[in-house]
Length: 249
Image (cartoon, rainbow, N blue to C red; front, top):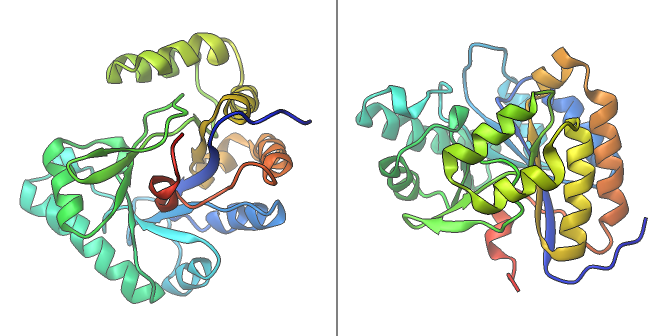
């Protein structure tokens, strides 16, 4: 499929929670010549990769922080939140031997004060769970805030609409009516990817490997990654932290 690209465009992927099944995601990304960012806590209610596995993963992909204990920041005292943010960066850098530039809020929950903690902690960007977005990251409290386009999981269309309403996102709401009504997540992904190629912006696929396994969405995921590969020659696929560096025309 060949579509003419008119404006600056980029693709990225991100994967949360550091589950051992993330290694299957990494294999698929490598198979299709794609990249992304894996957000990894040190502990979680679900299994997480061993330190050696995280170290190996970081040799091929960006590893971002997801707090130490997968802490929902809005549910803990400020002192605990700041410790979870700062310590997660330190721990990952000790494990990987590489700078940790990207942070992701567990369950997407945060306040402006948490953005300031992320900045003080030394991160350059923070990924949210804003969906149906194709815009480049915007700065908030000195940190690039990264929205997403589509999550690799089955969910009712009402979830997308609620996500748009919660964030008062006009363009996201337009995207809902254009692309997301009564469609599977993979169909939404295909449509919005082609829109980014034609009109510019960012296509950002994200998800949880454990959820993809539970819902048996691997064939759908691979179909989306295969299409991303088709556009790779004209649309760069970059880690999350690189999005803020790209020129926005």
